[in-house]
Length: 163
Length: 132
Image 1 (cartoon, helix red, strand yellow):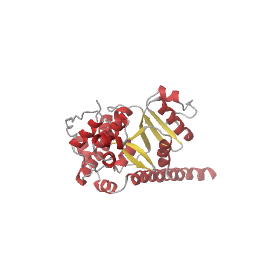
Image 2 (tube, one colour):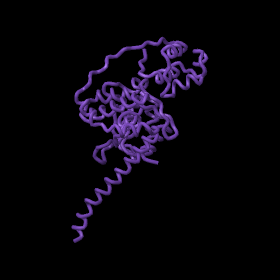
Image 3 (cartoon, rainbow over the protein chains, first blue to last red):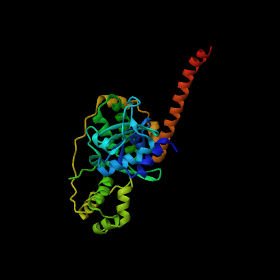
Image 4 (cartoon, each protein chain N blue to C red):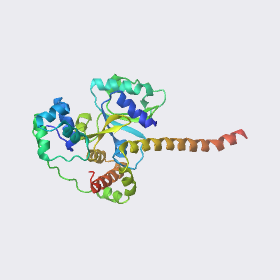
């Protein structure tokens, strides 16, 4: 089992309400790009913050890029005090996104998701039109290349009658 | 008002909103539970506007269809698009989603191993020099 698979299973088994966005979502739609981290848009309800903390705690989440030794408490108050977190864990990097530029948070994205069966559980995946929208809104040069691939993907799916 | 870009997502969210089972919603809309299940799950489901409207109404909502202007093509994105290797995309589209994610995980681990091996190889000459 790969670390990415274990991370996805941990979120699912922990009952975390989240949406897979970013590079892993692009890959799920058929992108050929590789990504190093799992990006999720998460529900910020108190119950869900508790579930995220419990689900990821065994994997020692820590702020990515922070100097070693910097005090960081993995807890509900920490999540409540922030919004977007870029973390490293023993299962790899994960970004917890409370809000995405130009798209909003979990509640706004929820209607634009697809349920996918992955490794024995159902996960929510941001749909392709919204993934393109989010990447366009991010507007970073590297995102434009990704948008180009996602749009090509959408054309291919339409050609195959999948879109 | 709730906005959805796909009927599947809308129907699924609709049931969550009103807390109905597929059977309950099907009964109210006059369709079988299996129809609701297929509409929610199948990416190939292509329900008519009439069916979607009937299901929405059965849950107490009125369906509205909205037109959104298409964004004009971005010349930078169009330029990048010409270089996209579509053979890889077609290959991926033929694989189940789980395979696509599993292969990403495998690639990540292979690349980590490669990175580690490269770092070790870079360190090795320095260590050898240190031993002399």
